[in-house]
Image 1: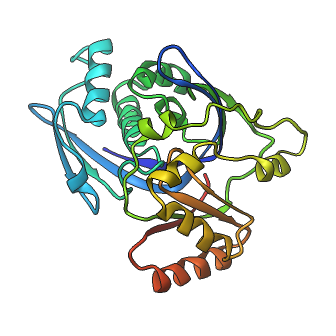
Image 2 (image 1 turned 180 degrees about the vertical axis):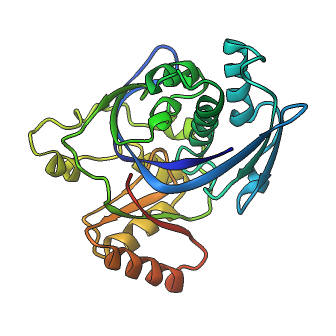
Length: 279
């Protein structure tokens, strides 16, 4: 059994206010890259998780890992007769604490794997509702399709008029983890307005922003270096994703994206990069 945990990016992220429960009200446009972490699983006598890959050392494989928590949640809901114990292998190709929804994407991939093989009657909406308590981004990661998220990001709306699938994308991370909580805590508290108020959504995307970019740069100045480098390589959009530190650049043609990736490999070999297309 196999599944891919597609990398999540926030094409824009507007923070509208602080909530009484410690979360924030946001408006964000989620998009997903055609690459990410990967899961394999087989029925076993007990649940166990083995992690490999470039960023394996940064994750624990205990019961608190979101992959195992997702499996336990679905088994508690549907019973062990339907959801058996599994030996799972996670190949961690995405950096951790990077604004790419890595843990959420892994959890969603685990949910899809269980659904495909043991709970085929469950639709995306039901599956997203079941696993969303584990993290605000997980609901969007279940379908892994471009969508508009509001509230904490778990209330989702389709945006079929924004045809971004096939867009060339380059991800860049300085290999410096950035914790989400402190970045949100450092948000200025100023509501700078809604996301997507006009008819031309691509133009609105260009005019949009990531309200967490400034506080994230304060914690990880390398983000500013990445955005400066990317801005000089010809993308039509370059922005930080989520709470950082990963930044993305969107290009119209693959040759431009690949030239940018090759330049960064020479000029900044210490940075992590991943090239792909939006799903």
